[in-house]
Every structure is written in structure tokens, then in C-alpha cells.
Length: 292
Ligand SMILES: NC(=O)c1ccc[n+]([C@@H]2O[C@H](COP(=O)([O-])OP(=O)(O)OC[C@H]3O[C@@H](n4cnc5c(N)ncnc54)[C@H](O)[C@@H]3O)[C@@H](O)[C@H]2O)c1
Ligand SMILES: [Zn+2]
Image 1 (cartoon, rainbow, N blue to C red):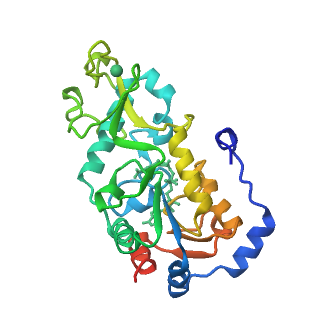
Image 2 (image 1 turned 30 degrees about the vertical axis):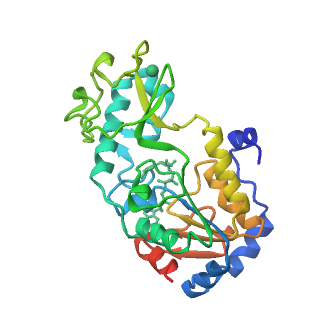
Image 3 (image 1 turned 180 degrees about the vertical axis):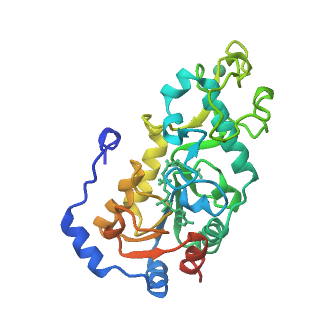
């Protein structure tokens, strides 16, 4: 799939006859899935916010999707940052602090252990939409972070990307970012927000996150597309399958014959496309599915 098409697609492209064929054969049998996984040589695990829900990190769509009175998707935009860098930095400061206190859960660990045990015979790639860093903290090594990382900054001028684990990221954000709905606005002067430390630059930093309305980094998208196009099995974990381009990855893999299994607490628009569907919290279902 070419990059431009991916960027502009906003409709699902899976022929409906595939949906019908798949749903009639769909299985929730863990032992059948483990057998299928044994013969797979290239496996992709595609994760979304749901895998971190059991670590206490709210998803965007469920309860907890609001920060103050704002939909997270309204703040995670370049327009919101232009209008109020202070408000957006408070939001990201809050998310950094929540994720820093969170711990990877049984789902993250099951994936990392699977790679440890089988990574020398199989190519196992985790592609995540999450920005919380929990896959890496659980020990996952071959990891593609599609949407960036809360603990990276990017300079708005010189574009330098740096890892930053400071807590708080700057003095002015200490004790800020409270999520309560009665808080409105934000008044931190721009000069007190995080700035580039490079000599001759000093511009405002932003979170190194792909915001709504922005394109994914070319190399990262290419790596993800490559892994998706060659895998013979794919696990789709805790994603609502509505955010593109990740939403089309697994249905496309299924349509070219890869075995695809979905792990979610409820069906998604893509569920009928998949061979396996495991309903329930993935901290419980993934360890069963990935057991030896
Ligand atoms: N942890 C994070 O880094 C984080 C958190 C919120 C949002 N986001 C971003 O928001 C965007 C939203 O897309 P998305 O599809 O990742 O998330 P989403 O919020 O749209 O969907 C979450 C999905 O997870 C499922 N889910 C919830 N709890 C689960 C559990 N315990 N086990 C299995 N499934 C569970 C929900 O039913 C839902 O389908 C992504 O681009 C992502 O970058 C990231
Ligand atoms: Zn700079």
C-alpha cells in the first residue's frame, strides 16, 4: 500500500464477501490458535490503548477518555498546540506522570516472554499505537511505535528528537495537569514550557507524538507495512480498529490469508474479518493464547 494512499484513506477497503466467509468460520478456541501460531514464521502483534487499560492508563474511547472537559482527541492536534501550548503541555505532563507510575501488565509480559522464547526461530514484531512505553518496559525488543512516545520530545524548530524522562519535564509543570473537570484553561507562559537546549536554537519543544491530522513518520510506516505484509499470523490487541492506518493493517493481512486473532473486551468493526476472536481483558486472554 503506498504511503499517500494510506494517508488519505478514511474508509475500510475490505471486500464484504471476505467478512462473510471469515465470520462463519470464526473461532475462540485457544488450543487451535496455539497450533496455528506454532507453524507461523513471522508474527505481528498489533496493540492499541486497550492493552494498557489494565495498567490503569485510560483509553481514549471508554470511560476516562476525557481530560478536564476535553476529548483527548481535541487536544492531541497541532491546532490545539498552536492555540495553547500551555494547555497541551499540561495534558501531556499529566499523561507522562500517569504512565510513569503505571506498570506493564500480564498482557505486556506475555508478549515479551513469547518473543524471548521464540524470537530466535520466528520473526516476532510488536507494532503499537500506544505512546506509554509499557511494551519496552515489559522487555519487548522488536518494537515499532507508530505514534511516537510520551518520553520523547521534538524541537518545533530544529526538529531534534530526544528521550526525556524528567519528572516534571520542567519546573512550571510541577503539580499541574490535574484532570478534574472543573479546571479550565491554562496560563503557563510559553517561555516557561520545555525548550530546546541546543545552542543557537532554544525553540519550544513539543511531545514527539503523531497527533490527529498528522502523518506517520515515513520510515516507521514503511517498517510497519513491511512487517504486516509478510507476516503469516497477527494478533490484534486492545484496539478499536478505527484509527488509521493501523485500522486497516490487520483486515488486509487477513484478506491475503494470514491468520488473524483479535483480543478485545468487546467486538470492533473489524471483528468479523478475523479467524479468531478472544473476548475478555487481554491481561487474561493473551497469557493463555501465547502459552507454550
Ligand atoms: N496507552 C496509550 O499509550 C494510549 C492511551 C490512549 C490513547 N492512545 C492513542 O489513542 C489512539 C486510539 O486508538 P486505539 O485503538 O489504540 O484505542 P481506543 O481507545 O480507540 O480503543 C481501545 C480498545 O481497547 C479495548 N479494550 C479496553 N480495555 C481492554 C482490555 N483490558 N483488554 C482488551 N481490550 C481492551 C476497547 O474495547 C477498545 O476497542 C491511538 O492512536 C493511541 O496512540 C494511546
Ligand atoms: Zn531546537
